[in-house]
Image 1 (cartoon, rainbow, N blue to C red):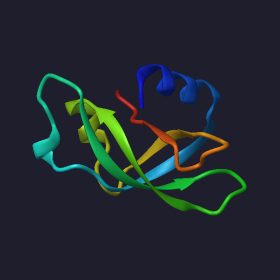
Image 2: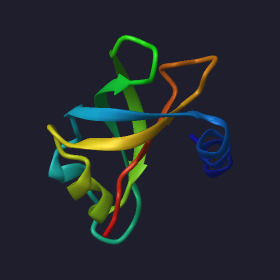
Image 3: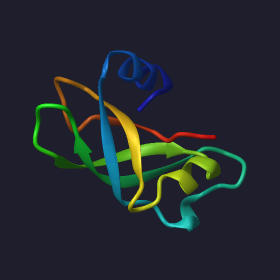
Image 4: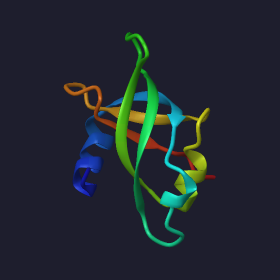
Amino acid sequence: MTASAQRELFEKGVPGTALVVEAPARTFVHPTKDSVGKFTVTVELSGRAPYRAELWHSFDAQDWELLQPGTRVQCRVDPDRPHRVLLIPRRT
């Protein structure tokens, strides 16, 4: 997903929560550049049964640490294409 598509989904997407089920292995993490990997998540949206989605998501090393299996993160979901999900890891 391009940066502009991510921005649009962040602004117009339906807010929800995603439980990370699977994340890329550490070997996919570049120490200084953004990486891209496949994540499997269970998405929870208000008024809808939870569902599983697989998505390719860009991340840096710090985001990867926050997107490990068992972690819940905020997300935004395309209302017309619910398997189009943007993960929003929370940095402190």
